[in-house]
Length: 187
Image 1 (cartoon, rainbow, N blue to C red):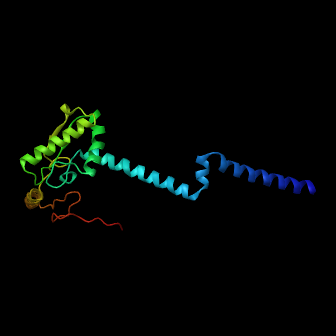
Image 2: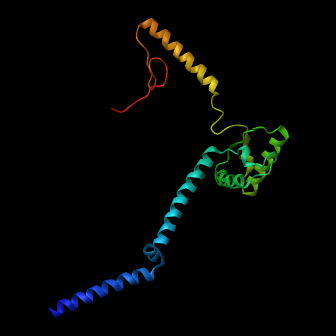
């Protein structure tokens, strides 16, 4: 009986020593034992994830917006510099088009802003011979909302004529028979 109690004490002390030694020796393992360090590590992972997502969006858009400049000047703001630096890392490997919507800038200001963007890219080791700055929005100008309304009206008119000829109502995926967007509900 005495040997069992002694063995239990010895095993318990051994376990405590191992736990204490594990938390005290390796700084990374010690961080796992410290709740504050654990929270900081989680915060870093969170920010790294969203920083990467933001960088991907900046590269995907490849657009320098008017708010990237100080008002009525060609001076890049801190945000403009930060986002253009991210874009520069991509343009070094894959030169191409950079969109820069004119906004309310006159010709002289737009030209000065274009020159400022090219100068910034050169400072960040981008070969600007392969970079074109164009006046436009991300992924092109798209379609004006008035044109979308006109296109939908023509589509609905065409569907109505076809329904009158055939006697069968025309439906489109995602649209009801009257042409308005359909609402799908789960039952």
